[in-house]
Image (cartoon, rainbow, N blue to C red):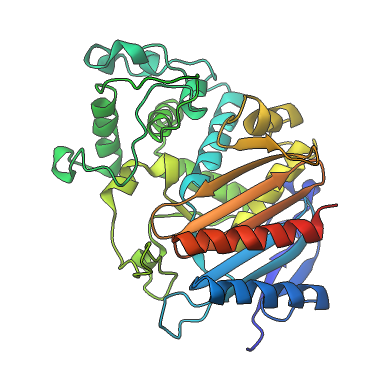
Length: 377
């Protein structure tokens, strides 16, 4: 194997506080994707053995602190049975890891006083209230972003509604989709948490309304401010030489525009490269330690840990070593991404794969456990 190199700025928390990460690069490190430091070489060899054993076409992983990239590698191929070798800047769909980005945008708009966490959906969209089920009348932005709703758990595998039911632009279709799902019967729940993507669709409508921008514009604005290139949908839809996703049978997903994932955009249809996603996760570590001026330490902690089990975009747990960490998993059908953020040890672990199989999940879990063992201090 030949070495591939990528220049990545070391993102310090000082840079984070200025919102000028790409303009204030203090130093540059060279990440060798296959041949890194001796320590990293061992990890790459282990990761590649996992990739081969569990039939993962392309695997990416990173271990970062708030100011350092400890390991970063992408290995394998962009498409199964091809010679399209992995590249550090390959793009992956991150599925439900989109939710943390949506929640972060919401927190910024709250800080700018354009909206409040307790703003009710139907206060912004009164024209929809009479058509909607009364069970949803009191839903707030915080309810919608924290799964505190009784909306049913819609995902891209559902047969209804059908493509022909909604017309117009993506934004118009999401508005019609929102109108449709607020008419549906509420689910019964044993506790106050109900995992539904639909809350994020409604929240996205609220953010668009108060900002005067589309959801895509809000994401692109955030990316520009952080030096991150966010995209949407399948990476190979724009460039067939980019990363291809693979389904549960390892069939490559042809370039396509998935209308259901367009409806679910604020819940799970962003794509990004691993080096760029590292920047977003380092921002979280900086903020959780109180070293960012974008949001306060309390505001970051609210997003990650402010509510039980799931706060705003992040699940969280305390492990057997009494380390509290936030996490999420993205599984949009043909990709699998996982991120774990440990605020107490200032470390985060990121895993990307361009397949969504049971074996892929097993392989990523094994790699995560090895990385966690290696850097758990």
